[in-house]
Structure formats: C-alpha cells, structure tokens
Length: 416
Ligand code: UD1
Image (cartoon, rainbow, N blue to C red):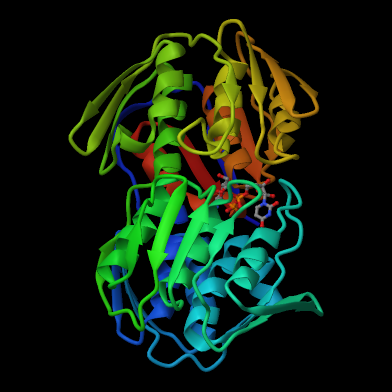
C-alpha cells in the first residue's frame, strides 16, 4: 500500500493549478443518465472516485470515453440500472445514480452505502423524496429498489440540509410529470453547477443556490457540453498548507467566489489573501493566530475544511475551539495529529486545540479523505520526516497531490 513521505519545514512558495471539483463532477457525470444523447464534460479531475463512478456507469451500459480531463458519456442504452454493493461501498456518492435511473428507466436497484468512517450517513431523505414523487421504494437484501412508471412532481422537504440528497431529487424531478419544489435545499456551489448542466440539457430549474429549488419536469433532456467548476476544497487545502508553513503561493484556475467562509478565517489567522481573475494569492505570516471554527451547510464554514483548520490551529499561537455540526464522528485526525505533538482535547463534537511551537514528524495513518489532507499539512510543518500510511484516501480526492506540492517546493514523495 502506498505511503507518502514528507520532509517537513519547507516554506511553500510558487504557483499551482487547481483541478475540477470532485463533488461537482460526481453528480454531473450521473446527470448523463437522464438523456439518450451524448454528453461531454471538461475539467473532470483524474481521481479514484471518478474512476469508480465511470466504472459504475459503464457496467450499466453507458459508453464511456475519456481523454485526460474530458469525458464523453453516451447513455443511449441503459441495460442494467443497478449499482452493486462492491462499488457503492468504496464510494458513497454512488447513491447519486438513484434519482436519474428511476427518472429515466422507471426502476433502479442501488446498494445501501452503509456506514463510513465519519458517521452513519443514512440516505433516508433521498428515499423519502422519491416516495413523495410516487416511486414504490423497498429496501431488501441491502439494496434500495425503486419502481415507478413516471415520477410526478411534488413538494419535498428534507429534514436536514443534504447535498447529495438535493442533487438526487433535483435530477429525478427534471423528467417528472409536473412541478417539484425542494424546500430546505442545499445551497452548495456544486448544486448550482449541477443545475447549470441540467439547464444546458433542457431542464427547467430555478432557485438553485437558494434553499427553495423549483423544477418543472420535461419529457426528455438533450445532450450538452459542460465544464466542471474548480474544486473549492482542494483550493482551501492548498491555501491552508501554504498558511501553515508561513508560505506565499498563487493558485490558478480557481476563485475565491465560493470560499468566503474559508478565506475569512485565513485572514483572521493573519494571512493576506488577494482575489485575482481566476486565481488566488496568499501570503502568510511567520506564525498564524488560532481561529475558532464551526462547521455548517454552505455558505457557512464547510465540514470538508474542518480537518485542515485543525492542523493549522495545531501550530498557531493561542487556542481555538472547533465545533463539527454536520458529521458525528469527524475528529479521527485529532489522534493522529496528537502523534505529531499537537495539543488537542475532544469533547463530543467540540475540539479544543492549543497551538504548540512545533510538531515532530512521525508515522501516522490516513482515515478519510479530508483527515488525510490535515496530516499532509501537519507533515509539511513538522520537524523531520512524516510518513502517512493508507494514502488511497488522498487519491480519492486530490489530483496529482505530490506533483502539485512539489511545484510549491515541498519535499514529498510516494513510496510503495
Ligand atoms: C456531501 C459531500 C461531502 C460533504 C457533505 C457535507 C459529495 C459527493 N459529498 O456529502 O464531501 O462532507 O456533503 O457538506 O458531494 N443525512 C441523513 N439522511 C440523508 C442524507 C443525509 O441523515 O438521507 C445526514 C448525514 O448523515 C449528515 C448530514 O445529513 O449528517 C449531511 O449529509 P449530506 O449533505 O447528505 O452529505 P453528502 O451529500 O453525503
């Protein structure tokens, strides 16, 4: 199993380009299931999660072709509307095929994702929404089985804000009979990117980016070309890495547009952040000031940046409180950061981080995608060598991580 070796203590400096957003690409590639015509997607990141999804679509009968960041999907014939357990268990976002499959084929069998390291993460809201739209849904042998001749528009209300739930129901509603209103909808920029793609396909959607989305169903959708938005979490992760090392970097092919909450905290921590056209510059002080964090749905501070801020707080001056309100078990990185010398106390969904002068390199284990990113940041500032095991988590969500970090001067390499 691959490991990442990081020689810490280098101040990051230079420029690197940000990839397309994983969390936008996953639902948007699933949208291809809604049309018989070919779809072309550009700026698709090359990540294990994308490979998994393309494999899943391929085994349903979708013709997949790929040339670097461009993916073409032809779902003219779907012969097997099933997402098997073997695939769903490696990537929970596979549930995103459920809505489009039911809408297009009138039937879908999708394995329940089960638990994952960061919490239980059920899909009851996805199911409740489809039922309200007239689907007969049963859960048998670990699979969600949904059947309906044609979905009908409905008023949907989700009990909590759910990103993939909103996306699944918005996609399903595009081909339903009549109008669907999703209340308490997720406002994440990735939901808006998906809506933009669906509109290019002929869907009639208004309100994406607010908490009430209206979709007027149409008989069929057409093919289209769509460019995936930049990855705001990858952007935020590199900004944190530079900030923690007292560095000065420029990130291209991205924007601060969807990063207000993160940029605000980096500025509170003492960084200068300048928005350019399609680029961001950050200059960090020699030592950051600790900043309090509370995660919440967009536009508040994203849970996917919580672990990275725990790493920067670990070496900042002062103490900070981090509250995680989205997932019940998302502090696994804390014990690994402690192995590097961080001073962190956990009480329920709150972590208190007392900044220390320095961390020391050690062997640590990645437990989930963003937790791994926090260990990379900690490794970059720690004295000596840090070895991060199980980096397959990083490969799910960070394209060419070592290459990009090396471009910024980091001493990092992958070993088998
Ligand atoms: C998406 C993102 C993930 C991010 C998360 C929160 C993708 C592919 N993944 O995950 O990176 O961390 O949003 O911003 O976009 N819930 C239920 N029942 C449901 C659905 C959700 O109880 O049917 C709960 C979850 O357990 C969680 C909360 O709602 O506590 C939010 O989860 P949700 O927004 O659905 O996360 P994902 O869409 O899976």
